[in-house]
Image (cartoon, rainbow, N blue to C red; front, side, top):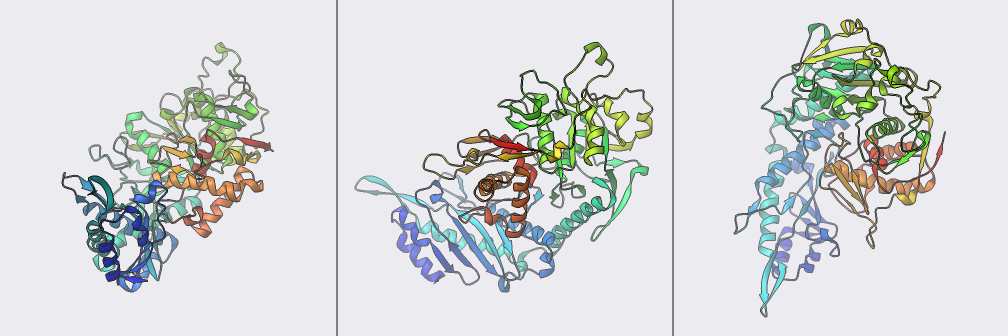
Length: 579
């Protein structure tokens, strides 16, 4: 292993050499307080200009107290804090070129409002290891009148000997970390986790803290400080939950069963439902949703016109379809609003979801409900709305639902277990009042459908349809945001899968698909079992099990979003179905 003096000399010698000479950076280099490693540079790929490096800081230098990461929950939180600090420091040292344009040579995964297990940083009792990319600096020199791109050794020295030491020192060493900040970050995560445990023990699916700030900036996950209206609730709804660090957290718990949330779209209802759907994740201190938590197996179901569907049994919601498709094994390249939401509902249950979330602003009006007042005038219908099936689904399948809206959800009132009202971000219980209304509930068109097939029916994936290759490239998985994923020749539209947290999670989903294809699909497992096996492997082996090369841009996805990506993959095909 070369030391930092030898590495400095190497960069001096590389100055002005052809770019391919950067290959000499591959290896381990001892910088006294940490070790820098480059595992390899693939000069045939676009990633050659920004290869992955890793820094390993021994705990004898970092001195992170063990109490900050002595459980898996606290470890995830502390790793998240260290990564945030490093991303922030890297942003502060962006160099400016002669044109006044900032050039960020060092890049690391930057977490958003959510705290997720990631592979960018690992914290152990022995060391901290962080993975990042460096855009290797180049310069243009003139040789025989011709411009030639060559290594900029001076800039490389600045990166490795000025920028990186500053980043490491200020972000990863405990002596430079605000102790109160570290404690708050870790304790906040532990409190949220304890609240989620309380949900399972108390027969609830979600908890919304009194005073939570649920409004978000348009198109963003950041708090909207121009619309700061804390969530309030009637006194009779308030319960207190003891958590380790905050003490008693006051809020309202949403029970198992069928819960209806009434409110206009601008009353705070939509913001509340969005926060409940995002409550599957823990949030950073100051987000406003720190104590808005939801059970981990909750899935938000939306209408999604144009999505593809492969052999999904939506017979519980339709006896026949206008396009002539078979409801018992429905396939289409471009679903309508009704069929897309019906299929997404069944797919979520197939993946193991135990709580389904619906809001009328993102739902098909024909799927959500009908108007029983005019049903007799319209004649026989071939469709069953969610309102007609919801009670049966909750009772027979043992799942829970939260349905929210204002103008399309009256038919849920007679069958709901709990009815809440949201007005100007204030939650009240109007169950008794609403039950007094004379509303005729919807009845299923075909009452003989066995809903248990939603859970017992198994689809088997055709392995050849999960193909991440393009030409000579056997693995092409790319994403710039959480809305789209390039998987081989296919572009997967994930815009309607709103519970994907960020691009690192979307990217990890792509690698999960490839991993599952290589390891399990060829062995003949149905989709549900494949999701079980991948979940087990990620828990036991971590995210690095998904990839062949060293990278630090993955965040752990849930099985439900993995299933959603498979179901939306244009090339996806089902080989056969078993009951």
